[in-house]
Structures are given as structure tokens and as C-alpha cells.
Length: 425
Image (cartoon, rainbow, N blue to C red):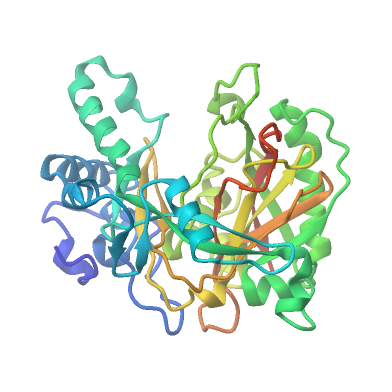
């Protein structure tokens, strides 16, 4: 199937978009090729059925991919290839981290001072994919166990369509060495590169207490954002995640009580949390429906949301360690190095919404940054969405976690909190 064909060619005959469904027009940044996406790139909201936000249509598409074995040929190609590196159309990829690391050493791939040469994990599958989130009713319905098992196998296969590729990380604290006159601690850096650094001495004492995080940390981050971006009128922090592989307490997620739980794993796949559609859809559903908002209650009318979103707005993720990071650092990629690269959409199916995240294939000249031994007062900032599409500013960054090959064997894994926000101008 052509993933970028026009919307009308993919509309089912029985699809009925309700007048109240917010369907943003599909927009591409100037110079950007069409993404690998379904529905002509447009949001699943266009397939709304009686207020379901397109979830039924997305679920059907996910089940169709499961039945068709979409992507199985990529898995077979990778798993039956001869031992050693795999030649892809993007460059040499490796099945294992250690294998890629050996290649880096053998070929004397070196990073500048403060940087690292190391493997990063990218997808090698350019078809759009689906994920049914853990809170979806599918997983709790005994009558649908067979369907759930099939979907679980399909989703596990996403990771089997990835390879490690050699990359270089630069020290973000040395930004002016790579971009003269550009400070990493500036809004100009965010506008040009989609990444930046900030300083925060938080008064939040227990980041495992979701209510304290909301009461104290959310307000601190909103103030940080308003201070950081001149011209910003307001900021909204709407949820957060906590990461700690070694945490021994209760990790349970409780959406009803606005508690994200504690993540055991680190997302070691190159990705971005939003895209052209989901940046606007997520903003709209927060403003008008207060949907899955862990922060301040929002109660905008449709007309008020139209007015607010007619001006520039951005989605910014901010990551703050609880203590100095020893292992599994958070790394960020600068916008100019992939501004002309198509993204690959992954549809995340909830019971009441369809989110969209993005994945990217490898390029040797992706401009990656990290913060060595990131301290508890250093906040890394990455742009997930910008409403400006004329190419004058960055639209987003992408990011991942990685293994630091220079860290001691007993280095503590990253313990940090990541908040998601919108900033309005």
C-alpha cells in the first residue's frame, strides 16, 4: 500500500467524521518529504465514529497488520543474513551493541573532546506501525485473549526490526564550539537545533510522589519555561514519567490518580513523542477536554482554543535527573541534521484517542548531543513539536537512551523525571 496517498483514497465507505471531531489539516515543514503514514498522513480523528476519536479504525488497521504479518520480511532478512555487519541502504548496521562497538574501535571512529563514539539503535522498517497501550481495554478483556496475544507478539517484533549503527555524541555543554555564538542555554538554541539546556534547583523532595511532583515540580517547570522563552504568554505541564531501573518500590501506573508509576526500562530506540498531527491534536484535547491532563485543569471553548492555537505554540519535553547520571544517559539529535528526512509514524491506540509518535532511520551525519555526568540541577530540553512550518525554526528533535561504554561497571543507572509541556506565544 502507498503510505502517502491522498486521504480520500483511504477513507472507508462507512467512515463518518462527526462535526465536533478536531481534524487538523496535514502540514509539512518547508522542504520536508511526506512521512511514512496512513490516512494520507492525516490524524485518525478524521475516521471518528460517534465520538470514538478514530480508535475503532486504528484498532482495525492494527489487527490487519497483525494478520498480514507486516514487517515479517524485514525480520527474516535481518535474522537470516550472514554473521557480521548488515549492509542497509543507510549504512552498515549491527544486530548487537557489542558488535557495533567493536566496529567503532576497529575503524578508529573517534568523538571530539567530551563526546562519545558509540552504537545507537534505529529502526530499519519504513512502514507505519501500531501500538495498543497498556491501559487499553483489550488487555483486560478475557474474551479477546487470542487477539491480545497476537497483538503482543506483533508489538514485540517492532524491536526485531532494529539495528545498531555507529554514531558520535557531542557534549552539549560545548555547543559554542560546534555552533559559534550559540549558547546551549538559550532560546535561540531551541529555535535552531530543537534542543537546549536549562538550570533548575527544585524544591521537590520526592519525585516518586506523583502528587508532590504535580504540586511543586510542575509549577517550577512552567516558570522555567516562561523565563526561558521571551514572548511566551503561558505554559502548561500536563504529565510526567519517572525512570529508575533499580527502584524497589511500587511501580504501578494509576492514570485515574495521575500517577505514572516508575519505568524500569529506558527507551533505547531513536524516536520523537509527537508529529505534525499529534502535536496539534494533543494540544487541542488538553485545552478543550482536559484529557489525561495531570496538571492545571483546562477549560477552553472550541473558539478559545482556535484563537490560542492560531498563534505559535510548542511542545517541549524536559528531563531532570534526581542525582548525577552514571549510566543510560538521555541523548538528543539536532533538527538541521534531519530536517529533510521523512519520519515513520507509530500510532498509539488508547480507548479514547490515537496518539502518534515517530521513528527515524539512520543517517551517519545525524548531529547528536549528550550531557556527560548530567547533574541534578541540569535540565535537558527537547522540542517535540512547533507550530511554525515555514522552515525558519526547528520543528522537533528526536532522542533516545544509550549505554555509555566509558562508564564504570557499577555506575548507577539514570534516575530522572521527564515532564511534557506546551508553551504558548
